[in-house]
Image (cartoon, rainbow, N blue to C red; front, side, top):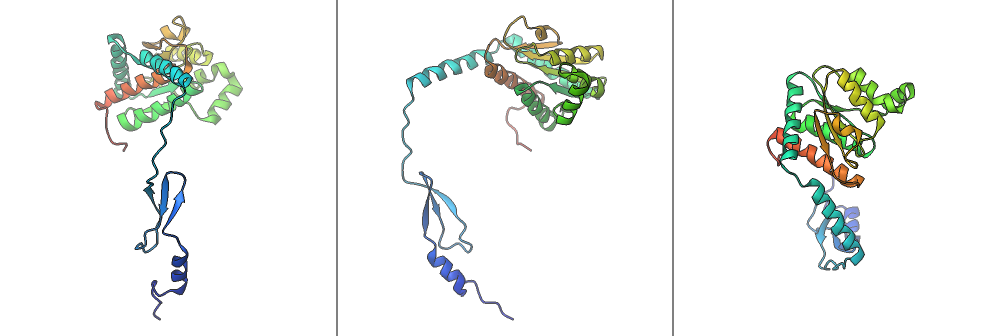
Length: 245
């Protein structure tokens, strides 16, 4: 049996006759339905209405100028920082050569950075890496050993010879991070630390390589930590630009 053609369908013709050529979508775009499209797939087209010119509140501008200046000063590097990033690259490649992995640890925002770094180092730089971010592991070990010691026990259970621990703490005073570094030392693992705030924080001198950010802003410290570690990852790769896959 022959089916009726699309163009001859009364239902389709009626539906099309009711559809407007364009519809307003938000303030700056039109929602267009091409008349020659078989399925009338909507597409976004730029509106002729110009974007408004926003004036910046002087107080907001002053705050942001100061804020961006803080970030610029924190991420400004010298040969000492270059040497630390180069040494980090060497430690990660040494871990891979020895059949080990790079283990990233942190709390809160630093835990998010740790997870991001572990993924990128493994996927993009082909260096085996992991992060202790599993909620079941965290709640189990914290329940059994206390929050200050759960990461140390995660290191004890999961780390192996040849691994390198990257310990991230903005303040450099997180007890569970410091205790995990102590555990890594007893297992003779390589250790890299990242801290900020007070120059005398206890984490700053516990690693083979120790990064410290001269800022008392948590967001500036965390952003700088991630930036430096991303630079180390790209140094392993040897390129700053590469496809996501």
